[in-house]
Figure 1 (cartoon, helix red, strand yellow):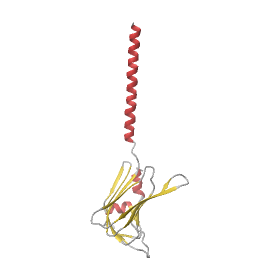
Figure 2 (cartoon, helix red, strand yellow):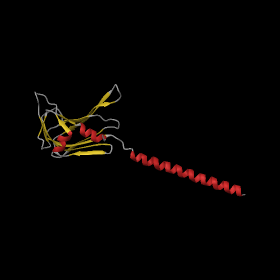
Figure 3 (tube, rainbow, N blue to C red):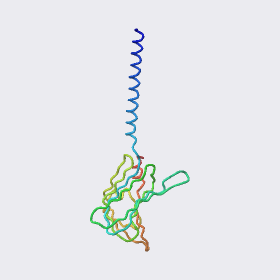
Length: 179
């Protein structure tokens, strides 16, 4: 009789201890899932413009494998407005490059006032909202005339051509990647 009692007690202890191990495994798995943040690039470009055109946010030279690269372009038709317009570009996880470009359309000369550019990648987020930040984190090409104290861009033709764009500097891309 005593052996049966011991056997029942041992089986009960084993049964409860196995359940606790399984529960702690589930808790650990759930907490590690919370730590795994999806690393995808998100860009919110907030601006005003005085002419209609097609603006783009592009990510170029994304490495697919050692033989292939790809480009992703997000287009938006913009119209003149007294309100702030926004282009929100979300790139899928696994798509990140060192070449991120903002193209300001090539239909006509115009003015563009940048209100802010919010960029995030994983847990890293930066809001570029001052003229100083624009100079620090972006390079503007010769089709864009810009006073370093202002966030207003004057889009102009050069030699009869119009191809205004600005690119994200490597210092911001490294900050986003956490490097």
